[in-house]
Image 1 (tube, one colour):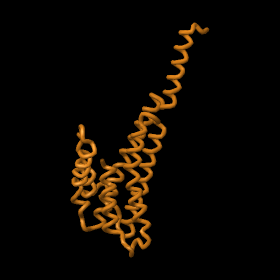
Image 2 (cartoon, rainbow, N blue to C red):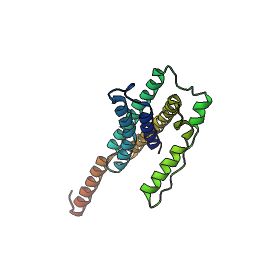
Image 3 (cartoon, helix red, strand yellow):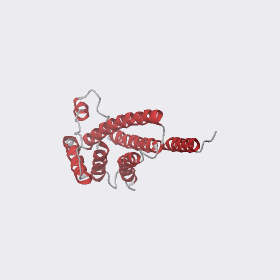
Image 4 (cartoon, helix red, strand yellow):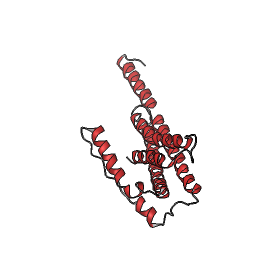
Length: 192
């Protein structure tokens, strides 16, 4: 959900603040929107590979984290280009954004419809900052959300690694199944 919020807000940021005078070739617009798109796309693709390849799942999740780090640097660069620094983690502004909590999803049977409603509702929780006419407020908010998601993805990768250590991967599972089948077959045939 947070990855989708960041993607939508980044697209809005780029449309509102990047133009021919500060991004004459549109390169920054492309880079930022593509990095933002990469995060939920790679998380979704990694999750879809959960049952078939733990290795691919972890790699795609890490690509999402790397794309997010790239986007984070773009927002930091925006602030520095405006001769501004990011909000301190101790500032009331930082704390206000950081402590906004997202609601748990409950999609039941109509996943695409209900998840879209849910994502937009979560995005609106940050309207105070995302709808600001000051690009520095918006950049700071997105910088905080990016850092927050980087931490979440880091914990997800740690859990994926622990699961892999405990359960192995798909290839190992196939090998175990094949060996068990061969053992069963040889026992049935009274093989030595």
